[in-house]
Image 1: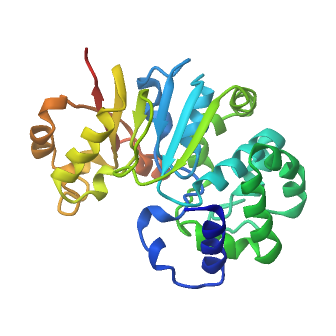
Image 2 (image 1 turned 45 degrees about the horizontal axis):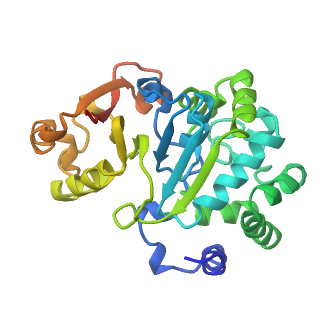
Length: 310
């Protein structure tokens, strides 16, 4: 999609129109990740390596940056991802951590069950606008158009998932770059040195021109209702994985509760490991998003990981 078409889609969404081509789960933005990235990021060797990741929140990129990944490609089907990525990057570069939360958070902020009246506020936007223009001029045009013509609540509710934002302590726990002021400042320093490319495309249709040391496929797997589609995704991405590289095949929620096995085939591990046996996937578990939210460490999330051997 070209920029004018994407901007028009955003305008029509903010006008409350139904847009058929956006009527799919991954076609609008997540304000922050819904994965416990802190639970798995140390399982990958990112320092001075290359990473291909999906994730419209841009948090996968910022967390990898903190871990010294220097070459990152963000691939996402959502047409608004690039513009939010540069808005978030400009916010990181020009705002302190409290200002960053104040500018980008909405639901459950500043306290649980509250809404943030300072979301996308003009004072903070003026602090980042020059940097946003320099980072990516189209992103500046995109946000300037929306913020001049629509109130922040409308923008947040129409082009983001309205209910996909956890409370402050959860967002800080699952995102290493947001966990402390020190990490935040480190991410700010390191993002300036990252070679970043952002591609808006369907993972199943994209043709990439290079390979990567690490690939993260987020939680696409559970939404593929047939194993042949899961295999198609992994086989396609395996082509772009370097030897001795690692692929996060899928992020899985609440795995010790056999989460949604009736709806999402990938949670039937007996069948999944049989179907994926040629890749010899490893199941790595860690504290779940649900456990963090409920302050109960009994439940685990997991990732399926494939390591490409020579």
